[in-house]
Image (cartoon, rainbow, N blue to C red; front, side, top):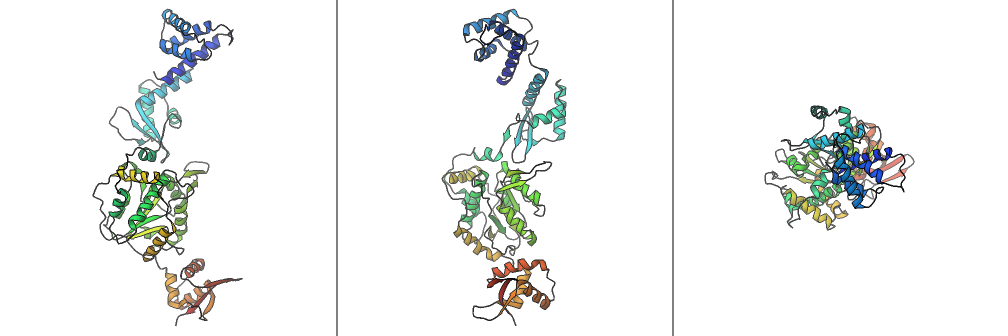
Length: 468
């Protein structure tokens, strides 16, 4: 019998003895109480030595070891019906029986990443944990009934939602059970599997990888890992496979390449549910989703309501992002591209050679413990911005502007026009329909092109020269 079960049985027996000793005084004779208690412990099935031990430890009973041991021994020698009657209330007995059944037949854990209870059956060939579903809960109840325990579905649900199920944090389980780092550059080796001509790729990948691990550990809670590598190259270069291989096998369940930015609430929940999100076919993300993409990449925590929940709660963000694309013209943010590490893949990525995940992540943990910087500084952001110019998409409006206008030089007379006026003229000259909702977007394009401007009462005027 477990220590906790003995403790519960003893306290129940002690409570029953106190109830029966109506004339008991805390400062009075405790011999009668001790005899009554020993009798209840005997009938509850508590072994004699455990009764002595718990009686000695209890603050209300005499401290004389000889008196306690002698009294308990005499009661146990003269009583009959060992374990014939428990001092527990029926509710207490049922809970203890349920707890014993659950722990004897099953291993349960509450996965903090998935917010699900997972289970595997003991003494079976089911070596892996699986989420508990209705079918499994019904099977648990049925198995309990086979053993004569009246355990119903509501009891199973109550147990699974209680603190009797231990919390399981898969990230901590993996990261804090790693061996010592062997001193080799495993992160650099992983980066070099991607053939490319980017001179700073290995350095930038190392910084991103460290940032991913740091945010898993909860470092830098006021900021997210807002930078994402984007692997750009033809099909069959194993880009998506490489992205998946970044996570070790034990964490593969927390990788996804299916995220829909049009479903904003689901996308935000993914920040808490997954460790690595692959924005596969990055070039398919529309211009109208760019502002939300920027928002979600920089979001340090998730404030939302879980499915079937009634209140908004703050959820920890774990996810980092990576992306792939078959096309080079994919960056459309007019404010710059410092949030992406664009790299053109020049050959098939090596995804065949085994990865030593324990040493790969042990290196990251060792570097973080030695306080190596895991965030990008201004110099690195400037490198990314400059390198990403090759992958910036020239919007149709920008191309039309360069057909009909150019930026006025410093001494040129030119014209000072509102963005809306320029658009209207372009629309008339090109005979192409341009929506009025693109005026603000067009203004940002003009600023990116370096068009000189100043603000008046009616709005911002831009200094341009009509071509031809």
